[in-house]
Length: 319
Image (cartoon, rainbow, N blue to C red; front, side, top):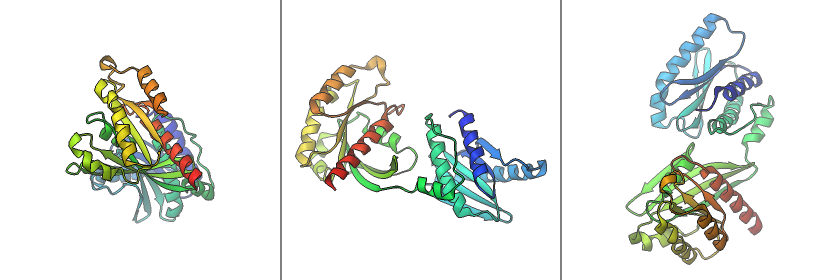
């Protein structure tokens, strides 16, 4: 979990920027409170009442997380005298805003999306400004995409190189997953911001077993981008990259943005394919190269981010 200092500063600014908000909590899926801020000026009795409320809400969060109640949207609950606005931050954390009954919940909804996005960045241990605009218009501008894209991505490579784990690690906070082992493909949909643009990734995790080859030609259809993975502890998976590229080129007629990813770099003692070997192959293939770890999530976000940039650039060239 990230340090509480940046989170607390962000929550203080959130309360200061919004009218009618009384307290804000970051709560884990097990109901435990990560941190909380109550607006200054409340007396002990009022603080006690707010604490009791959040304790009650925390008790039901465990169930609501399992039902997917919070996923991908903002939810509101009204009780006599109080209102609650919920926004999921990631699979394990939800942002809860308590407000008085007169508060404009539509405004708080916009702010909760804005603040939750910043919390997610902080939880990834990345820097983000704790400032929260006092202008509702500014906040809505920040959470409204300039453009929205839908891109189909295929992830290919030998069986066991970590394609599925890489996909799930990237999807992380907001994803819909559908895995069909009987037909040799897993599909994950994920919303991802690249600057002011919202990219809807449709990630097709294609099975690496040989007996799925005839079916795979169907799954390549319409692909606009590709990640090619190999396992740095298995030289054969590195050698087979060329075979996978040949298959990609045979099933996808136009050249699409692709990235070569060396996975399992966390297994330092077992590594058999060096960084230099990977970089040389990437240069030969004229592809960007990333070293990633599906276990620790190292560089996974960066690889997808860059692929998204390439896809947007490619789209704009064709427009």
